[in-house]
Image (cartoon, rainbow, N blue to C red; front, top):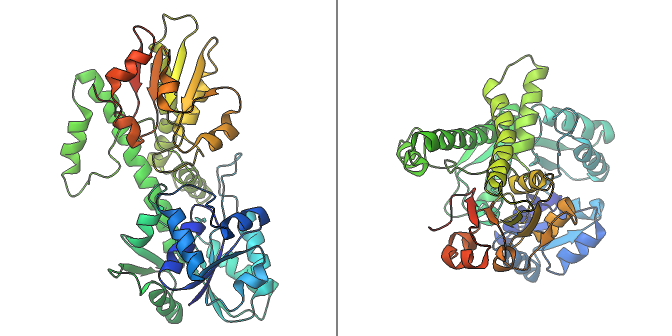
Length: 419
């Protein structure tokens, strides 16, 4: 099947490479010519485990191509996927659909053959209606069916999740579109569970899912604070909770809060939608505010560990918002570092296995960047572990502390370090 994917970010690129590996003829479209050139040469533009190999395999087979031409990319495609960013509006918290609508207008002008337009971007409920109307307004001859096909790829595990989805949600009432999506994923083994719902329900499922997972993270972080004062072990508490099938163990790991490109913006966008419709989502509101406070609390714990030192040197392990990715968008680690460097006399030396380049774009020269974790810890008064990379969990902390200043302390915000 010929498939076109508009957007080559954390959703579009793994999806395109994955579909090509299933035997489909995939063209990924991006307006950034330099990015297209790099991807066409087999050079990944973001880090995901296994993605580089998947990209090169698709290119070598001839089933995966890249272009900056919308007309060329969508020609003959039976399915066109929109995987364009929908960033947060910083003033209102709502999803900014400018990039999506710009891509839709350009797409509509190029549609000549019948096609299913699948929205993978996370969009407010009823956006599918707007996209459909915009396509027909731009090109009255377009023969398309607009469906919702939300992505549920976890950053850091996107390749794995593409091939092992726990469900594929398809928002459409069109029988032909349903059959086409079944055909699209038919080569996948084992056959994935497919949930066919209305378009608006599909759009809502994405937001409801992300908000619920964000709430689980916030809840276990509050329980961690409670366990600390009553001298209980939050890990044992989480284990006992997770064994209950009604609760489940996923997302019950305490830490510095949630981040990344999805949970922060999606919870705010959901809250904005609810406000517009006169609905109070008190749990979502509390989750958002609590997540902000969590970063402040972690930063203060780190500073308290160095309160008796006039000009403390703080080492930071981890800058990405989670392990397995180089994404620093809304990273709790970045937020915590920004709190630290506001304190007069504090110097920060940081290291991350994959996210150094992205971190520099956000932190600039306000911190020193170390080439490895040992160099970051050298001479530090406090070591703060902020991202859950395996190499940090496996570190010999007794040896690490020998590199640090005398009486140095380790503040393990990810609960990883071995005693």
